[in-house]
Length: 186
Image (cartoon, rainbow, N blue to C red; front, side, top):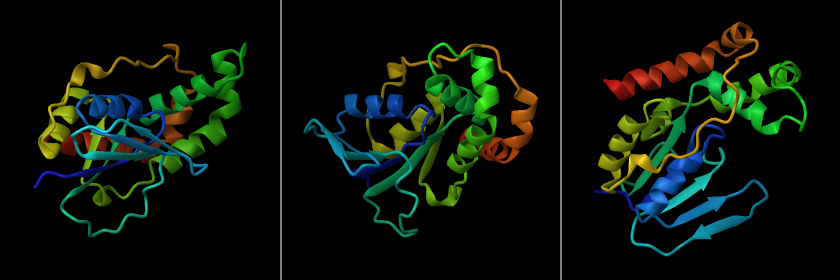
């Protein structure tokens, strides 16, 4: 049975907007939920309904109906951190300075984002394995998904200030991300 409801746990700075755009173009009507309780609806199309929210679906029951697919997308935690800092730094502030100011709270946010029970998801894709992830999601949903939809690329500079410090702090999320990638590739 192909799902008629896709529940996307959209983890910020992990490629979720590209995932949403790809599914919308494949015919999924999109309902996005925002922290303030607002919602946004996009089109009445033929595909399964896509519910999407930033990290609001962590409490779904373990037993779900077969017509539901609960999934998320991950990204290298270091890139997630750098993208988060780049997107939120004050105008005119140098990137390295923003990293210094945000290393503790920013790294904490990434650790919180990656505190996931992998067994709760029906599928987890990764930004780094985009084509493989899209193919697997297409197989599970029965949708004709176009992996070439991903136009957004990280806007952060190529320098990676304090990468050694961050690698130590983010070792748990990095291990989880590597585990997901290994399972996806198996």
